[in-house]
Length: 379
Image 1: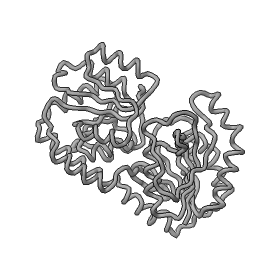
Image 2: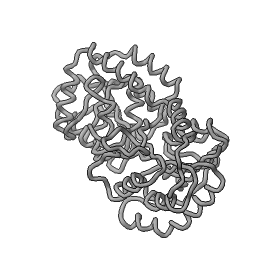
Image 3: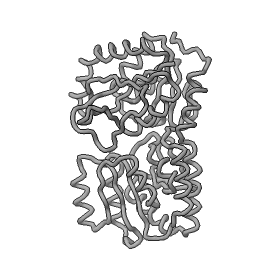
Image 4: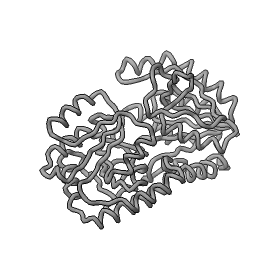
């Protein structure tokens, strides 16, 4: 069986000509390739050097189908998508002729027109992956439109979390991010990690206010017991990095800015960290939370989307109010915990991470989507 995956994943060419793409998505495809004769990945090919978070395809049966990059921030960039619609649809149509099933990864700018195209003009078996906050009250217009369209069509949709009045064709799926070897490593790390101050914290993601970086700096900057903190690792990049760095220097915070790192290096920081921070405005269920939990990192995260369905008082700290004040209160609460309490929380984190293995994901894709006998033809 042959599969086409359509996404907005950024790809680049290395100097040696090898195509690489955003690590988490490429890892997922490399694992899925074990279950398909061929996988065609339709995605964007950008110009310039690839970030360290990029990975190559390791499975020889994956074929990359490049698209010219479109979209971006600002109305002008979004309107430019319109002129590329015919070319994108033509590429999708041609690729679909070569496969048995497809997956469209949403929400994305091209999803606004590809969802109706696939719904109205293709009877090909397929499913959609919605990686955003499925239960967001006031999502951006494009996200809201795509979510509405996905609710009102017949193909299956994999989503984050379980929700009241969830349509039957919308299936709760965890985002895979862990191998069995990484699970074994996580077991060893979690069982030997010592939860005594000073503590090490980490953040992994885009360095921007929406992800909570300013919140992190403000909350730690207002603490009086900085002696309890060894290091705060900020992994990622963003337009405000220089601004954030200056604030941390002025406040005397023990912050290390790493920029983008390769997966192995990120996992190395999980292994030495006690807590993972993600006090963001909105999320689906970020893989970095599950990755950190696998290595005994206790999450301090926003209670948005499905995050609260995996993180609770037994294994982490939820920000019910997403603010600098609430984050500061939670940090003080974490510092007040006994070593035995934090050790138990880390063990519970490791158990939760078992839901996010590539093996379980592949099994569910085959059983609940590919081998499903439901009628996937769109009326």
